[in-house]
Structures are given as C-alpha cells and as structure tokens.
Length: 220
Ligand SMILES: [Zn+2]
Image 1 (tube, rainbow, N blue to C red):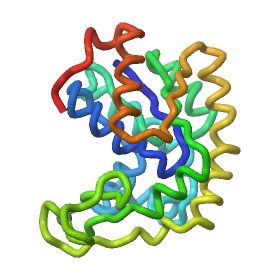
Image 2 (image 1 turned 180 degrees about the horizontal axis):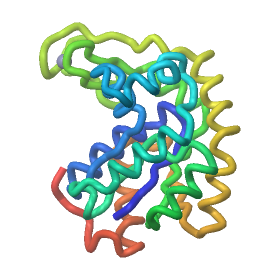
Image 3 (image 1 turned 90 degrees about the vertical axis):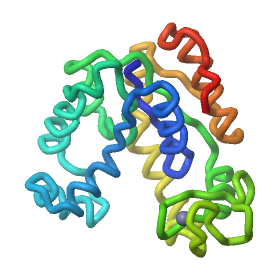
C-alpha cells in the first residue's frame, strides 16, 4: 500500500495518516516531522536543512529526494508507506514516480471555511502533544489534557489570517501535483470536511476498492 496524502494545511492529514498507519501497520512518513527531528538532533542532514526549516522555506530537491528515497528503502517500508508532506513540487512527484510506483494519491479536500472553523477549536497539549478539538474531540475536563493533566493551549499559527495565507499558497503549490496524479489516474478525492472517523472510513473504502486491503479492519 503505497500512498501519498495531499491536502491543505490543517485539514487533518496527520490524524488520518496516523490512524491508517496504526491499523494497517505501514509507516507514516511525514517529511515535516522528520525534518524538524533532524534539525532538533543537529544531524549532518539537519544542519543542511536548518535554514530552510527555520524560515518555512521549501527544502531543495537535491536534499529532499535522497533523504526520502533512503527512508522508503528501509525495511519497515517493505509493505508500503503513507507519504505526508511529500511530494511538494511537481518535480518531486515525477522523481517519486521514477523511484517507485505509488498506488494512490489521496486528496483530502475541504474548503477554507471548514479548515478555519476546525483550527479555531483546536487545543494542543504542550507536554504530551495530544490534540483535541472543542467541537470534534473535546477533552473530558475543560482545557485539561486527558492523558497527562496539563493545561491545553491554542497553537499560535491557528489564526484565520495565517490559515488563509497558507491555504492560498497550498492551492498554488499543489495544483500541478494534483493535475499530475489526475492524469496518471491515481488521484482519489475525499471530502475531509466530515468528522475524522468518517474521513478515515472513506479512505479505507477506497483502499478496499483498489484492492490494497482485503477488508476494513475493525481494530481502532
Ligand atoms: Zn497531555
């Protein structure tokens, strides 16, 4: 099961990828988190990409491509992978296609209004990283983390102006990639404005249709 997840920022790609990864035992490869980890650990690679990551710039292809392809060759990817945050350019999509054939590019689609509404309700735990939503997944007690009891916070980039800018940038950046996967007949669009559970179920139905899983796992 080789999947690429595409979708605007804050649409819930990470949540869906994590759930699918846990259920079907294939790794979730989030280049954003991997890059931040490399920078935090000050690895050789981390030092090379630091200036881009810190400034929110696109890490150049000559650095990204070998890094991602090396990951995909690791033994835990032998059954497949869920790519999240890659490809980010048409060139990367073409390079990925030359490296390995993916089974589907899943486009999690939601209008800007839904993303803003959702992001504004989001609360994160500064200590354990748990994510809540006042609307979809409220904590048991107001503003308190269910896992560790810490006080929950809003993310500083969860404000409408920033979300609007990021959405616009996403549309400009990803349209060529979306078109590319559409012409290759690999693009599957999923309505991500529904609650997360339904979105995941929707993706699983597609995976069954494509013969990538035999049936939907009941395990959550
Ligand atoms: Zn917590």
